Length: 206
Ligand SMILES: Cc1cc2nc3c(=O)[nH]c(=O)nc-3n(C[C@H](O)[C@H](O)[C@H](O)COP(=O)(O)O)c2cc1C
Image (cartoon, helix red, strand yellow):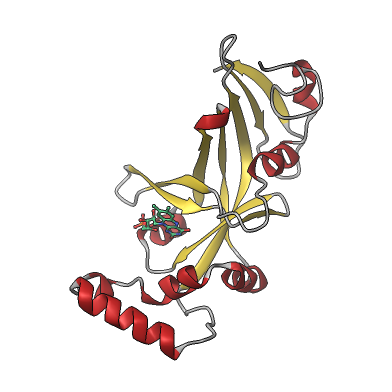
């Protein structure tokens, strides 16, 4: 049963959710226990041909009010974000009947953030960042596995590859959706045109 206190995961009456800082609420919804794998989020970009593109990436962190993800500089999404530095993210929690959508402007992560994000990746993901390229993709599985094992054995510690890159999504819109087994679903949307502005919040039907 969803009560007033738990409606959006904040300790307040439903109408008071409009006064909540959406960055704090997003941090609360996305918080992971130590050792848990990062959350997966859909990342939508404007394709260079004008058609939208969507794929899933890991949410590395929320820091300084921005949501960070990391990728390969040769990937389509990087070309798309370079041409149109705007993105939409969506994270579903079907078991908890929740969804968070974020729209924002995108800028490249700085060197310190790139480095700490790489260092925090699992060994598998560090290796993947080195070996996930067009040359390896086209090889037969046995050769790919041999190359992987050789590279792994030859590199006990790993630096970020030159293709390692990452982005910050600076939110201009957060939409928190929650289902309710006893009634209609509901959203709360926070909007602002620039990071200097106050958030403008609105309760919406689901
Ligand atoms: C569970 C899962 C996690 C993924 N995490 C990432 C990620 O953090 N970064 C990334 O670049 N791609 C990640 N991918 C792969 C992307 O979905 C995508 O295939 C790849 O980045 C190429 O996308 P693009 O050609 O649109 O740039 C992940 C895929 C899955 C299924």
